[in-house]
Length: 209
Image 1 (tube, rainbow, N blue to C red):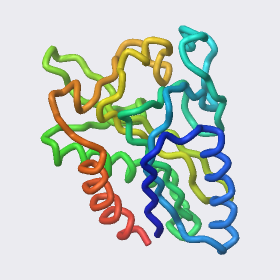
Image 2 (tube, helix red, strand yellow):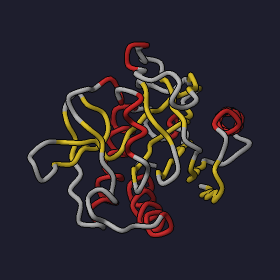
Image 3 (cartoon, rainbow, N blue to C red):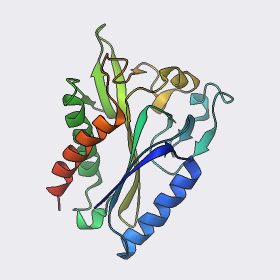
Image 4 (cartoon, one colour):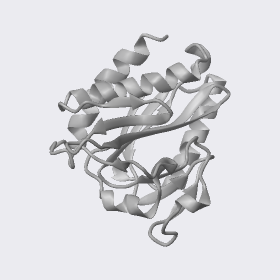
């Protein structure tokens, strides 16, 4: 498996094109699986289930329609985006288990920083309980499969501008907010996060081959 870490902000459309080309090559057997760690400039993406009413401020940031599952979400500096390109045809063809494994990877990474991440039935992603008793999403998941090869992936909020979420109803869920490691009082840089992410991702996905 190739691990690719890009340290400059990556334009969204060019990144999607790259993923699509890599997915085809993986399915054809001419390229290895890849996990790509990067950041995007501030933007919104609309998944296949996005509702126009959830785009609260159409002029706040650029909006890109995308083929991943899910609704509206935000990407921007300070958020670690993880694009996961695995060949599920060789990994059991179990989409539910794949998503569960991604969630577990995120939960394990958050534990490294003494943050308890949790699943919620009917709400894809990873959630945390706040001091006031409410809940907030700290990581979003949105994937797509083509010929059983995955692309898109997940995003962990490390220290992004959380006010950017005011322009959308994230994932169509208005009753819960979003948070980040920084908002929880955790000082974490991306290199530190990446180290734990690679460790836990490798441990989880090496076992499903």
